[in-house]
Structures are given as structure tokens and as C-alpha cells.
Image 1: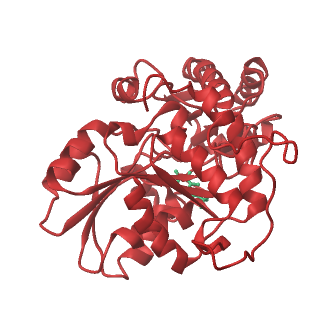
Image 2 (image 1 turned 135 degrees about the horizontal axis):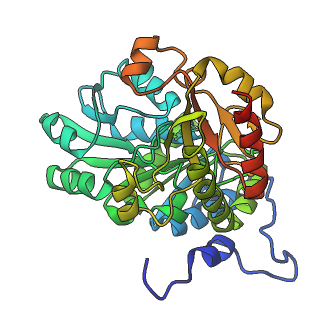
Length: 379
Ligand SMILES: *Cc1c(COP(=O)(O)O)cnc(C)c1O
């Protein structure tokens, strides 16, 4: 990214956009064809990741993340699994952050190991360094993490991976390129669940990989075999969602920054996890590597046995899986992402039984505060 390049809000709207013509107007036309005339140069086909609607949204995402190229997939897990299978071979050793998104954790445990990849779980760059082997090829991080919003120092991780010739892969779903750009901090590959903030309206399933042109070529070669492509309709919807990403992230962040201290001061709340709070253990790292603290937070009820009463008393916030949409969503990780752990394992991972994760939406902050105050009053 150079200093003469427009700001992030402008790029959300304009980057990657084909020039408007009298025939197309301001918006990218929807190209539904799966058959294209052959004979010219490149063969065009949806599973080759090169039809117009895929290329336009990929170009916008590459621009926003500061990468040379991008690919859009049918889900975050399609993007993540394809990337890992493209970058790792049987016998390789890979380092994964311990508190990963549940689906990624399951992919590592149930699939990668089956393919003969050796795995070590680490907390950060310091632990990663002590776990290195001659066969270590990759370090995979997610920051802020789910559901405790722990932040990992990306620049420190990149210093290690560059010195030892490993690839650094970062899941940037929670921060989005508006708040954090891992490639600029030294990461090699950024992955996303675009189902969350990038699309932002809880109505598209999609995933993204952004990297150098060379690495994207490697991932694309595997992706053409695995086939997790996003169809043209969903690409167009994702493209529309991305145009308001900067605006939405700004509102998600200001709402969370208001809700976090409100919850922290509430007598029914034992603890709030949000990197934007000055007493958060991750505040310093977040200040260094993020342009804002984002819209995700979690908090612990003093009386965990009242969690159902709390959820049932919310009027505005919706108890639901997923995150990153315009509407405020809440979930209880002990029953969702961390359901398969024993209570002891959950305690060891810091997941309290009364922990509530909040994806703070873009509603009026005063209405959200009123909603949470009402539900907390009965617990
Ligand atoms: C949701 C999510 C994923 C998986 O994405 P899907 O679109 O559900 O496949 C990966 N990482 C993070 C951080 C997520 O929140």
C-alpha cells in the first residue's frame, strides 16, 4: 500500500471495480455463464476461479488486504482447507494457535493429521520458536481469537517465520482489512470467513485467500482440484457487502467500545473480554497492530446458571451462531464452539460456563445498552 493510494472507505467502494459503461452502469454486471468460447488464451470456467464476478470481488479483496492476488471460495473452511492442503505435504510439521475457530481446530484434528501432517499447538511466537523442528513449514494464527478475543503479536510471529523460512498464515476474519492488515506486518497468506464481516449481512457463505501472486497460483492450482468455488450470484452479493465494509466496521467498533465498559461496570457481570478495554491483557498488542478494536466481545455472567434466563430476556440481540452481521448476535461458547470439551477442558481453556460472546451489530448503541441492561437486570 503506498501513501498516494486512496483511503480504505474509498477502496471498499471503488477497488477492483470495472469501469462504468453506458451498457453496464455503475455496478458489475452479473455473468451467469459457465461456458465460454475456447481458442483464445486462458480457458474460462467457474472452477478455474476466473469468471468476471469472481475476479472483480477478488481484486477488491486483494487491494484491501494489500496483497497481489486473491481467490474467493464457497465458505471460510473451503478457503482454509484448500490453503493448508496446498501448502503442506505428508511428513511436514505445522504450528497452530491453540485457541482457534472451532471448525479450523476440527479440520486440523480430523483431516490434516489423517493426511500425515504433524501438528503442535502454540500460544504465540515465543512458544512457536520452542516448538520448531527441521520439518516445520507453517505457522497458523487467528487474532483477535474466538471467543476470548486474545490478540497475538503478528510482527513478532513474522520475524520468526521469515528468519526460519516458514509460511505465516493468518485468519483475519474478526478484524477485517479495515482494522488489521497482516500482510503488511509480514504474514504470507491471509484467510477469511467472508460469511462474517466481509459480506456483513448474514446472507452469504463465502471464504477468501489473499497472498502474493505466486502463492495464490499455488493455492489456485489445488483449489481447481478441490472445487470449493463461489458462484456468480454470491460473488455479486459479497461485492455489494464489501462496499460498506469500512462504514460498518466503524459502527461495530464504536458500539462495542460503548457496550464493553457498560458491561464491565454491571454488577451481574464478572469479567469482560475486549481488547479495547485499557485493562485488557491484549490492549497493548491490539494498539500496535490494529486500527480499531472491532465489534466482537465476550463477558462472563456472575451467575452462569442464569444464562438461559439472560438469553431469553434479550429483545434485540439474537441468540444465534455466526457473527459479523449488521444485527447483534449472542452465543454461549460452552454450548456451541466448545460444546465437545469436558467442563474441565473448558476451564483449562478459560471458557467459563457463563461466558457469552457478543457480535455487536450496527444498531443504535443506546438501544443495545438498554437491551443488555434489561436482560442483565433479571439475572
Ligand atoms: C466462521 C469462521 C470460519 C469458518 O468460516 P465458514 O464461512 O463458516 O466456513 C473461520 N474462521 C473464523 C475466525 C470464523 O469466525
